[in-house]
Length: 362
Image (tube, rainbow, N blue to C red; front, side, top):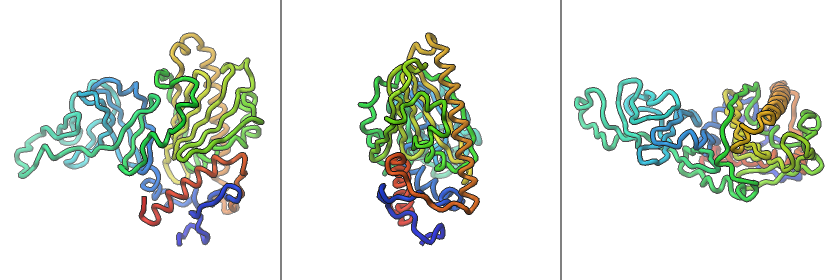
């Protein structure tokens, strides 16, 4: 039995009888350490946009579950996610994203690899008896592109990316892969990453925390749909005169920490990165339909002003909830069966990942 609680919170719960996760799930440092392997190393992680990796030599430096990665287009045009760790003594092969890469040279001792990750040369390598350069290769993660977004998975057993996003393409008003990047901004938050995800996954709080956003959405028609590996919250836009025009707001959550906020002409991606048991970073990126940036700069400004207000409101309430979790006062509350299906869905996936880690399966 876990020391987190006298009751095993990992037990599956039905929606109609569900309670939320206990406070220790948001405050226990030991559990936070386990999540690296149990959750983030066993899932698809959004890390870049395909436009950053369109030509041979284009590369992106990133990290997933503590593993340094180097995404690149090799000289044959193949997308690769190589471990950014030299096989000699762990030096980095690249320290910044960019283009024009022709080879991978370790910053530490100069060992050099080709863009497929195979060792080719290095200072005085002939002195190392028995070194087989052809067999000295950088480990490689899985990398796939969907709707212009690049995802990587460290674990070969992670279900296919197509399972994560199954059914989403058919709900989109138009493809997103040609949307144009406009801005990236990161927000630090003094809360556990799951507290932020929980908050994202329900519109129950919108009338109380987000009055500006609530004026755009039709809360009475706000709905949540859950699929095996993602959930969707959607609402008609309630104000045709707004800067979004008419249409539908789609808020997709992809297990475990990627969010896609899709409104007419705009895609906003959020990636939630744990930075400690009681802290995380939310990386926002904005993409717009081709031509919208040039023709409607005023709409872009209004869109980002509303997003900034909404994000600050979310960070504030999540930080307050985190302090409540740490206070010792909180005991698990009931999940609302019609307004918090997305929260329940996420927490059941989290329980399943935790059970698998506890039993050594999956």
